Image (cartoon, rainbow, N blue to C red; front, side):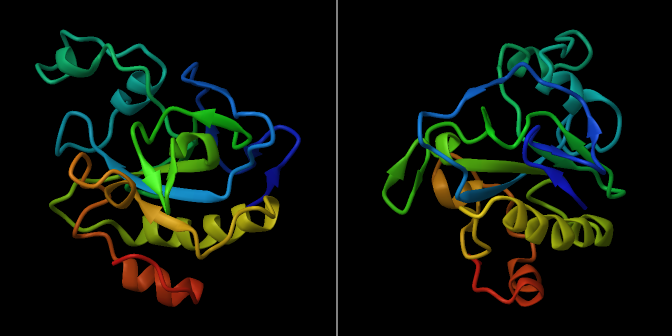
Length: 187
């Protein structure tokens, strides 16, 4: 995996550009990685619904849940699909709208200084081997490309927005990721 720091793009990712980003604040570089989970419709996998949500093309009539969320203007930097495909929506040096109201170690507005990675899944089932393998290659590649990042600063949406968010959820294997990366991550 290679990242072009001039463009902020991952070479092995399918590019699906989202408009849901802007510039990071002056002098602000990414130093946190936030892991999420997502499935659309809820608890279903596959299809283009996540692409549609992150590109503001979600049809509210296609599923009852979509009418509730089609107005959202959100996107992560990346999505890792169940079979391991990586989709990139926002260049890494831009501020993606993925974390919302959040706090990491006393710092508010985590979107300002984080990279968001969605993992296709739910709070109620295990993630796939292919997804973990992609994460285990991707995270060191991000740290190598962006010196302000550190493997010690990887967290879940649930940890930066407790009480509001629950992802990546209890089935995400933090211990496996900690062991593979050689760092202590939240459990």
